[in-house]
Image 1 (cartoon, rainbow, N blue to C red):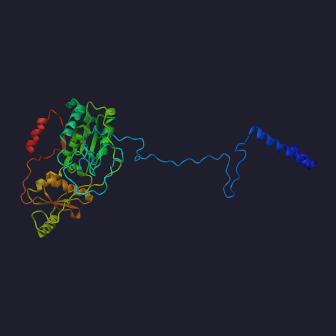
Image 2: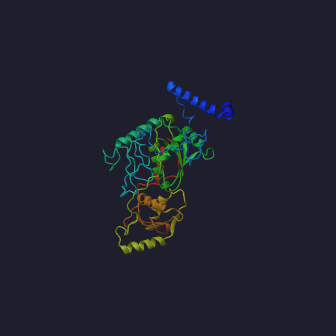
Image 3: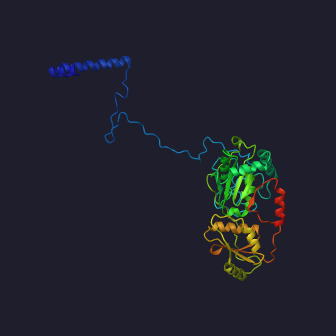
Length: 397
């Protein structure tokens, strides 16, 4: 290039001839060898408005998209044949006998789209196909038999008194902090998976029950044993110890599909009617006024232990027809559940929920229940003391 500049300065005519000769030589090369320069050597002219491109500029990466649990791509629905029971949000606070009158939302499965091989009816995911069999009426006896057989297979030989005492002492509150809390929603579906995760590292798990579900501790023990296939070996107040069984293998346990959100509760019939059955409108108003003026039988604490409530109300009905329970500080849905449980377990008639009070009436033809008994505060579940426990229960009756 420096030679060409010198030639052009000395003799411009020879420079023009030289450039013509080079251009003709390049054209001959192109015609004989069909050579085309790469695009990198002849860049296209840029637009005047576009910003200049840097030679080593990297391409922009696509934006990060977090994995979604609702994305069914590459996933197969979980097979639930090993769990022969209907999937519900709460097993202790919902009853298959009570039929709702409506739904608050469409029938979206809380397990996510395409993640479960069962259909969601708005209340539960039944073990049987709802299009084939009707969900009304009693439960299929085959499902109950399957649960019983599976539980017996997992439990194996029952624990003797020494083994039971050793497990109980191992899971005392002073020796371990690992436990599961059972609150106002009762035994929920996702809690089954939590219990199985605890059973990976220990033979038993301590469960602390609080709030409204503790009104019926017998139902909690029954549902725990029925849904987890375990065994309650100790109960003191609201504290339980649930044993997993001799033949329990964590790697071969049944997979519990998780609920991704809490489904809305369906619409049930009203608990408090405009008029009480057998009374007029005026008599109903007077009874509600008298019920709110009656001295409170007890005041309930938030997240307390309420197993004493049913026998207290039964004893109070022997001397007075109206009973008031002070629920100040509790949420409205909590003392509504308390009233519903009292109606079914005592039994009695609900009068009002005004001013955070639960007022119940024993009815005109009240007869004390003879089939109930006072649930003991402590149960050891020893095989040696079964006859003694039965005798104590018969004396309490």
